[in-house]
Image (cartoon, rainbow, N blue to C red; front, side, top):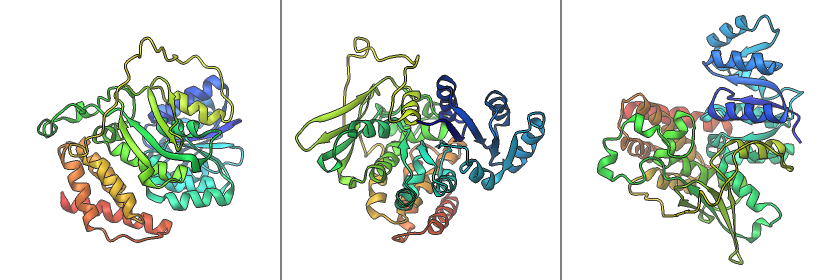
Length: 380
């Protein structure tokens, strides 16, 4: 079981909830990292007293270094700081909850240093799944998923043989706009898109949930985590978010993992695997949650899910291009520079302009990521 952790992205939603789990289970937090929210980082550092704190923004790192001077905690800035936080000798597991492709390089650094990974960053596997999984196998590193859906699949696979799986069913809430028409989607606001019906998440992943891009990214992530072809990975809309995902076996049996929509459950499972620990989290009451419904996702209204399947089928650098374009357009939407329905439209235009490079290196991934972002800016 894990005794000490490093949290990359400790000021985000997953990071904060991971600290809650660490607090409850008395797990030592050796490293924290954030970007610009130094007030929260300082508070976390003063409570958990880690060996070091890494801050992506170098100017913010300098400010935090001054603030924490009385504690003698090492403060490091930039990507080198993140890489150091990911590779501390005293750390058993690195929790990767940084948003976006920014999590890729520190995750690779952690794997290189034989640290087990609790992964909440979809983009690491979306952009460079083959590279990451190959390196993890080479180094004997476990990658345990924190996403509720992938944690559910992982749990449903325990004690079974992957060759007996006929399909994985990833459930989706459908987001805040599930019942809106295409015409209504043209007028939705950023404020409306940030109101997820079931989960409390950061702004980027919340917008991705509204477009169903989040589910598309999860399809690609599942392919790499579980080694299944994409045609064995399905998405089913389940508005109540009680069944987190399912696995159907070739004999017709279906195993499902259920629970309240509380990210602390999959976080704790990853940190305590293979054991389970008692906690004070709310428990599922079937009498209160006795209406579980399902429907097919509407890829006409929400094309991002379709684009994700197309990207992984194209392979090579295409998923990285799609991901980079999505990160850029989501940022533009949050900044109210484009409207909601333009998100998939711009992503598709960028994908159409890309010539896929197969068997890419890490440098290729980074190069096409930058290329896709520049193409988005030109389109806008």
